[in-house]
Amino acid sequence: MFTYICKRALSMIPTLLISAVIIFSFIHLIPGDPASVMLGEQATPEQVEALKEHLGLNQPLYVQFIRWLGNVLQGDLGQSVFFQEPVTKVIASGAETSLWLASISMALILVLGIPIGMLSAIKYNSFWDQAVSGGAMFTAAVPTFWLGLNLMFVFAVVLGWFPSSGFPSIVESGDFKHLRYLILPAVTLAAPNSALIIRLVRASMLDVMKDDYVRTARAKGLSEWAVNLRHVFRNSLLSIVATLGFTFVALVSGTVVTETVFSLPGIGRLVVQSVLRRDYPVIQGVILVIVVVYLVINLIVDILYTYLDPRVKYDD
Image (cartoon, rainbow, N blue to C red):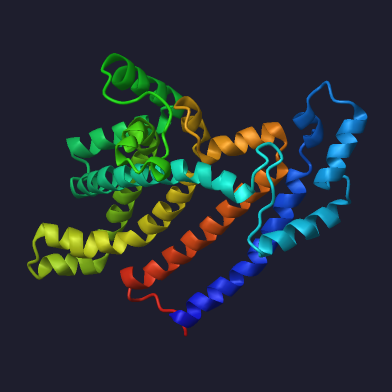
């Protein structure tokens, strides 16, 4: 197993290098001049050129790339053009919100999606199954911004149970009561994703129920719950775990609509704002970090396969 992990870690290097080239190339194809955006419309051409010289933006792209890649290898993602702070610090400030939001959303997805999906599969073609399937399809189709605005109106404005926007830093304050600011955004994110997990769990379990070993387990006199938990659900976990891993990455990086609705200082909103500001270092840094997180999650999912399915073996 250790050898396999080392091989997979080494195989990430070419992937990261190719990703770095693609990220750098596409980011610099974005129309607009970051120096002009920073200085405003009143800036003179001389001031713009002076700022480009200071930031190194007037150098050839390959020189900028080599310099950026060398800094990245040393753990330096550069300096934000807009914030005038290290990119790592800018990303860290947004990552706190996104990680808390993704974690709470994932917890809700697990609590809601898996049990409801299991019951739907066990009670296949019953009224419960039909109701759950219809509800899941409706929930998955509801636009995120519409759901977020309605939750905000009912539970924040009318009832006053939760804050409507913002998120004070827990790292700075040490007060975990601030997590209540993320309840409504987390529900907004969890609802459509739970619907997808419900349908995935249901479909996976129904597929496994057709296998011969399930009929054999029933023939041996095992209870229906033992058959469904120990044989059906466990053998359905491979596809479910893979989907949950990618869902978590999506929750961290792709929540710009929810973060905008609830005015959250997260990663998704940071990327959009950085694109509008032509803040190349921040855009490059965020996307590169997301790629690394994706690769690490993918490795963790592959390792979990060996524990979930003994038939999966990795050569040392």
